Image 1: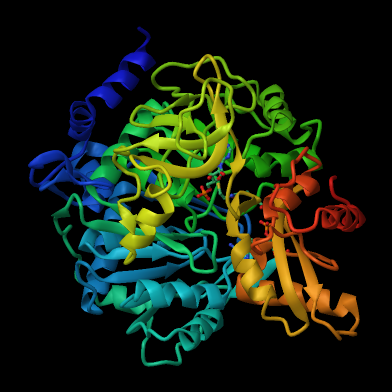
Image 2: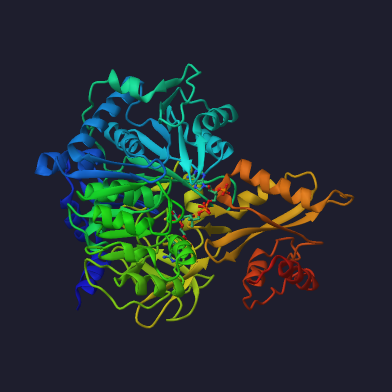
Length: 630
Ligand code: COA
Ligand code: AMP
């Protein structure tokens, strides 16, 4: 048996033994009583009774073990023209002081804190400071508008917000404070404090009683020691798009999370403590949580917080410059970043300016890696290009080529093998397991490994309904695909109304809820259509109310603005087709899947329950006018 098979079998047949062994790499202030509490399925709890502090494991213990002078964080910011390095010792000081400042503002173990910050080290400092106190952070991505932030404030009920005064996004300067004030005005729940980190290019007005200046409260603070928490206590909530406008608050615990992420750094990413590891994503996404902040720091790596884009900051050679300048060993990003680079610099001219010796592996995830992009990146860089598949819910890879265990030959289009801990199966709609190469629902047999979602915050019912009900005994991924005769998993795409635009997970349902409020719209559907660079983009199909005789183009512009104002610019909603009617089943369900297939130019079979098959021809014509299929 190969090394992978051996580890994989052990992880499935004896998960308690496997993960107890992995947990030895973490420092515990109290050992666990039980590795896995299976008493209340589908709620499984890892390392019950154990106590630890995630911040201590990510920061302090490296200082105690001789890494104090090693750089922990490199902030590389082409948008502000600065590069700043922070050692583990400096990080410890900053985090302890900010934790002390939070405590002085009344934040205690168990409180929630919303963090709304761009890619600056203070974002990581704020996350780690919460972890240090046992407070639960919820980071919200900066591309979400005030309305989305308000939804999260009402659900997470944060005692405090920690924000930056602003960000530079491409060439635009964004002021965050007015946005945050507007979100707090819109929310029913009101945070007690709003702590603002002032950046030198945009100063926020601290004009409310709740507003505090980061620098001032830190100046007056006494450092706080790490507070031991239960392994099963929440570390963070991360909201992610579901099929409706109400996002899902994925809850991650402390113990299982630390164990799984530390394990993944070596076994999946094949990096060692001291190596430079770069995830070019954003702290607002799960990739940022797991592989900008917690994973690399738990492992004692140097992590890069990159405040820029793959192109335009200043050019398509930006990634190569960062890799060269900071001696990056592994880069993790989304395929869309590579498609953007490929579009601007198809022959890789920029790469010729840089020596990338030491760059070992490129990891891609967040959306399907199309074979074209895979081949292009491989030819250009001449290093392994590793696709891996995961979700906000799992927090780390479900399927990957486990570079630190055994490297499998790549089959383009497949993220390769189930990662130890994940018993991946493909089933039909009735839950019957399918044979090799047959496409169906990808599910994971329970229990899930440590580090995956423990529940949905303040919504256990939705947790069970969304993930556990359709296939009892399994976690439903909502992705479709198949496993081939060699055990390679192929992930073909979402089976629900979630789309992935430039690696950003969005809900078409949420966009429909907004569009439906326009006074001219009788009904609507938003579907994901393919996009050359961003992978997917949303396209709206609307039916006007009877008697509407306003200019169509005007109304379309209003819809674009509504989605932009309420979800944010990252929704990238720009295209609308006005149609006579939408295809539906006789019971009134809109056939979104069929329209998606038409837009993609895929073969489809209209369901026998369709109300009027002639509508499909009309929709095909309407989508053709917008240029679909591409
Ligand atoms: N704050 C505020 N606005 C943001 C934002 C942020 N953090 N991130 C993006 N936006 C805005 C953009 O400015 C843009 O606004 P515009 O409509 O006014 O131009 C809009 O949201 C859409 O952004 P995006 O989809 O990112 O498009 P882009 O053209 O700016 O960049 C790429 C395209 C491919 C370069 C970019 O999407 C990218 O680098 N993707 C990498 C993928 C990634 O990091 N994924 C995270 C998961 S791994
Ligand atoms: P997110 O929760 O934002 O990480 O998005 C998760 C979704 O992105 C998954 O359910 C998949 O649909 C998609 N996804 C992520 N990684 C991959 C991959 N390597 N291949 C195919 N789809 C992916």
